Image (cartoon, rainbow, N blue to C red; front, side, top):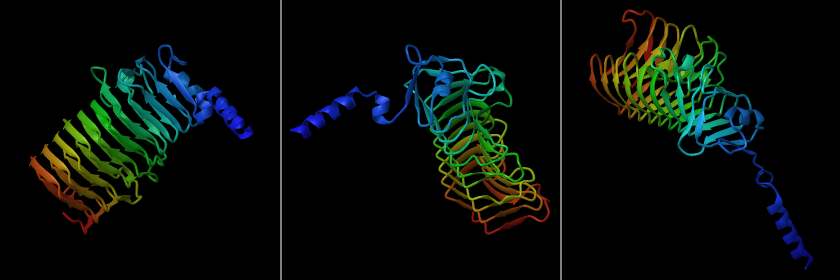
Length: 325
């Protein structure tokens, strides 16, 4: 029948169409024998919605991403990115970008592995390691958005070995914050200053991370910074394990005049701290209230297991109310 003929013709046309047109997906490939020799070339050619598949090879480049809605995905093991210099292995200045599965050796010219600003990005399953003998001050995975507004990003399943600072999300502007970012199920080892830092922020989820060793700082540091007077907090810090921190295991700190409230700390395992296992502290004129510290295990601290107090001890006009420990 004519209907049957029409169906056959349509099927043949579909088979003859390129995969990208048939599936509505723009896929670019990178690597030996592939369409592009470098990741940057593929990123520059990609349009929004593209998927960039990167095959095993050594890529000595710093990749700048400014196009929204890209997926940059390593295909198996041995996809190695080494930034020769700043800005970073991947510098993302866009939204809805995924960087997944790469091995990133960083630190040359103090270049971080991943440096980003933007929202709804995903950085997952990357193996990040310091690749130079000395790189004091270098961060592994960092967002220092001066204007704030880097929101709803997910950082998960990464391993970070050696850094000065590990995962950092902050803004230095007094009237800006970042919101609702997720840092979960990452493994961090031998991060000198602080493995996880969230400063000038609201509504973060920090959960399921494993931290071993912070020789000069706190394992997880969350708080206000500088003269920022925006009310902050509403963070969930749960089910993390950490040990061998020179400072506090978990440090929540409201700087002078700051407000840090409604944080929930639950199910964390903290051991072997040079200061306090869990510390909630407030500076002069700060507000630290309505925080919950429940079902945590804290042991082998050199000062306190759990501390709630002013810092320094004689800080005036500190408001600490309705905290549940």
